[in-house]
Every structure is written in structure tokens, then in C-alpha cells.
Image (cartoon, rainbow, N blue to C red; front, side, top):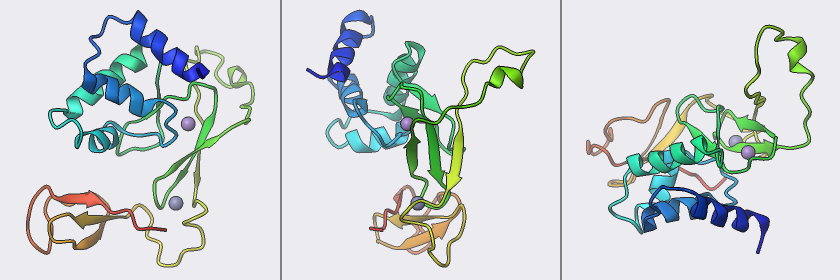
Length: 182
Ligand code: ZN
Ligand code: MN
């Protein structure tokens, strides 16, 4: 058994929360996950198998895991709250084009106490903003824009924020972030 698996079993045993199959699925999804998912990402990945799951359920589990120190919230994305089950000290690089978040390991911060004499430091996370391997050098880059695909009619639209309704077919709530195969 890997250390990580062992740790998750300990979490299950020690906690008072009722581990319903849905909640277990969230825990399982997070185990070893390197994608720094948001609650919405987790919901989207699991709602097919668990039709009664809600984003609120996901948040409840995330808040619980955060409070008990099993998951770390990372502050790299102003649109979404993102979570990291990897608790080893590390930092992140975020691609300002595609939004992917990468782990930066073995990076030592300077002695921050020197700069914050009057404060108690709770946490320090360094975020490096990058164009990732896939995005660097691409022409027509629009910073901060994302592509959204209407899952009803298939139209792809570029926008800064998720449009409420599809400009082509007019249906509401069918726009999903479009992942082009870069
Ligand atoms: Zn990128
Ligand atoms: Mn990370």
C-alpha cells in the first residue's frame, strides 16, 4: 500500500463525517490528483456517475478536508477556488493562456520573516505566471480569454467570462469550457 493510500484510509477512520459513496468518490478523485481541480471540475468529473451530486456536496467535502488539513487551497486562480491534495511544500506556475497549473518543486523561498517582522506568517505560496509549453509562441494569443463550446449546437465562442447563453442557438446553461487538443 502506498503512503498516500494509507493516509486516506486514516482520514476515513478518524473523521466523524459520514462517508457516503458520493463523498468517497470525491476523496478518491482527489487522491494523487495533480490537476489542482476546482469544486466545479470535481463535480463535472463525477456527476455522470453520481447524478444526485451537487457542487455544494463537493464544497462540503473540500471544506472539511481543508479544515482538517488534508487538502490545501491554492490561490492561483481568481475565477475559481482550486485545491491541491499534495501537501508537500511546493509552489505553482500558472499558464495565463490555458489556465493549467503546474507544480514547481524544490524552490526555496527566502527568509520571509525578514520582510514581515510584525506579522505571523500563516502560509506563503509563490505563483509564477507563464505561457506553458503548449501555449508559448502561439500567435493570436488573447490573454485572459477562453473558448467556450455550446454542448447543444457545437458553436465555439471566445470570451473572457463564460457567456450566459449560446450566441448561436440561444440556449442557456450549455456552454462548457472548450478544451482544444493542443
Ligand atoms: Zn498553457
Ligand atoms: Mn500543486
